[in-house]
Length: 262
Image (cartoon, rainbow, N blue to C red):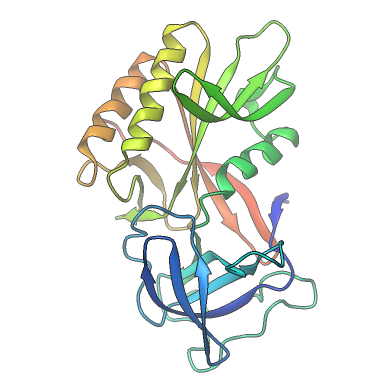
């Protein structure tokens, strides 16, 4: 039985996507009223943000925050179970209303999820490759960068992990990034330096959609990132693309995806 790592909060709502603007703002139609929600996803969310698409918004924990909603999930892959009447949310258990159509699925677009998910999954002992590590520090500065995770353990070198959210799938291949990512490139370069210094380094790709069966860098979108991806892999940076299951309760850890060959 899969262990739920992150639960959806109570008070989430499902609406219809209207538009995205100024990079971090999305307009969503909820119960006939257009609300402005925040998105922390700086990528393109290629192929997801189509007018009228169902989306899931979570409420702000801080009641004084200017934008009271955050974009969490986007529906894709087919017709929503009831296009004329969006289901109520939350259900009695406080999770996502179950959908049984099989015609589509949710995609997780919140880019704050991956490093939070990693930390909780690590603490639950779900990663065999982190055996021997007991301390997990987040947002640790190294050189001119700040990486998501730094693991410590007795008698083992530090393990640095950069976490990325994956929302793009083409021909069953989950791809990252979905837009040119200079920041992502910088992180790969920093991971290579860590390997050169004698410590461990890894990337954790959080594939938040169920149709990705394999993983690889998006060469047609960001050739620089792709070139550096294969270079650091050969140098010793560990690559861990995991499928993340979006269930009626929240997010759980799925299997690791096979990596395409260069």
